[in-house]
Length: 358
Ligand SMILES: NC(=O)c1ccc[n+]([C@@H]2O[C@H](COP(=O)([O-])OP(=O)(O)OC[C@H]3O[C@@H](n4cnc5c(N)ncnc54)[C@H](O)[C@@H]3O)[C@@H](O)[C@H]2O)c1
Image 1: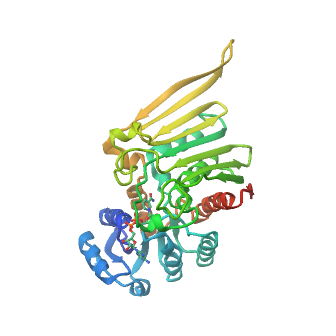
Image 2 (image 1 turned 90 degrees about the horizontal axis):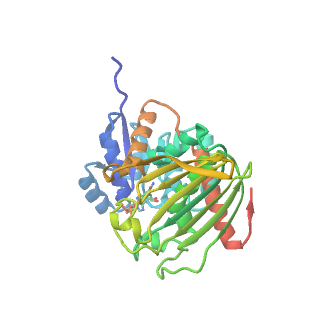
């Protein structure tokens, strides 16, 4: 019997997401020791105790050849500096999105990855979601013909709260921070290069945000497909911290929406997170005209939200296994970089009022 390969890993940033990353490392059969880093030594010791990991200074993590993986769940500004440090130190890196807070940073990271040839996967975990992979599988199977039009409506409550690092972040922050996942899906489903992006944002409503709170992003892909993403972060009534983590029944009809319509030449797909549902239509033509029929519907229970929706845990388990076995990333960093270009083009379009062509 072959022995299970085991690695030591270090989690950088021991906040909410750091806790999720630690739980996957703890559950993985491929992990031996888990270290944790926070810049403030007091918080580092406290969070390490709470999460059951070994506290360690960043320089020591980078210096220790026995630590094969760094798992970055720190605030966005730290992602690229820490990922660059990790790759240069010869470590495999799993880094939370966004891949940088500026285009320059994203470029720097992809260049370092290419120069070192190191393992780098960015946390676009929706590729591991049962809901969104079902859409991908249907598209690949030809169930909707050629995808031509993707519409996303995402409305939620303000759940970043006053005086948080998120509320204090400037620019088009929410595009990288939240919408990068959803622009990434549009790219994944079309499987075509982007041609152009145009985005608008109306004056903000949330008074304490240093950044915009709404985005209407439109994109054209090679082959003629178009996509929109319509985001508002203040309309829904209920506040349960991140509404996507806790999909309470009330939220499904108080202004929250997270829906996609993926239209193809032969059918369409709808995903609806707050109704925990995915449906598929088939198009046809009768003697009297064009017809559309719902042919498949799947729903999922609340207990399965994690695996059907964000599935960060499932992504992390898989990435740890890839690293321990010396395999390459399943969602390559070069692909995440294309999504970041999409995000920054939308920001640039909002800043300048121009269509950004690729
Ligand atoms: N993939 C997803 O769906 C998803 C969901 C939530 C958060 N995230 C990402 O995870 C990251 C963390 O988010 P969170 O919700 O855990 O925030 P959080 O505020 O709960 O935690 C951030 C932690 O990083 C620490 N920190 C600050 N500067 C640091 C540095 N230089 N090095 C290491 N740690 C540092 C903070 O002290 C804090 O403990 C963010 O980049 C966020 O975008 C991703």
